[in-house]
Image (tube, rainbow over all chains, first blue to last red; front, side):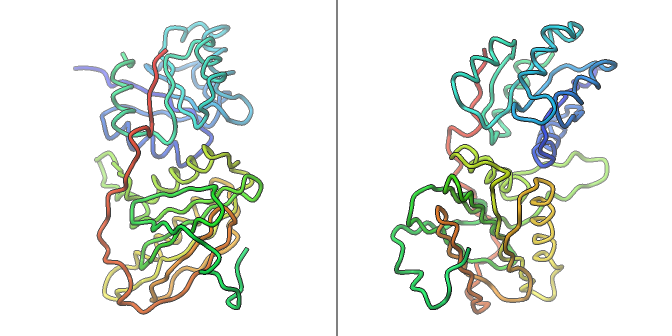
Length: 124
Length: 188
């Protein structure tokens, strides 16, 4: 039996997390949620995940901080794909996410079909 | 911020955009009026007084019905999606969430024999705004009358008139015209 792909969504917006949960779980994915980068790191200390979808602008630890930590100090998840999901569209921020080690960049508001296509492409 | 009835609201504006069920419109153009007619639907109007950006959505149902053992699904007719869409479009246009002010209109229980969809919708909109820490500066919801809402979005000025029931739109969702660019994905 195939294992369910587990996705961690990181966003300080309760409604955005709810939309992601509905979209992803409706397509057969297991969804875990964190409200900012720090909560995500805490959870990842002792859990495994197949894909991380993270916002950029969040309190306590933003998406850049999360990606940098996962690609730097917390090496256990160094190979995990990370999709950034943000309202930001500046090339500077996109370049920063790329340098930090993000796998892809999705502009909010997300299109459910495009999101699922992106998830299928990167989730293992 | 409301225009008093004595002021000539309709003569102050030029372009008028009708916000249909399932749609979201955002503008920073002076004089553009967003307008809609509501029965049990809700229209949320958001405004950032610093960026001078405003927007309106129009949704028929609050959230998808969740059945035990089945994953919930949604589409763009639900308030959950359309509220998020409105907030994000506002931010893309330069608004900041913490500065946004909201008005909500609609949520009438037009058909007494039916369950109180309007009340559920209105309660959802308030819950959403509360969860997102967006200040609700005005609400005109409930009752059994349809409403017409005119919103000078970039100025944050709204007017809501109660209208005869026959003027309420039929409760049929209209698919939103989602731009092709929404949710674009770029891989690094």
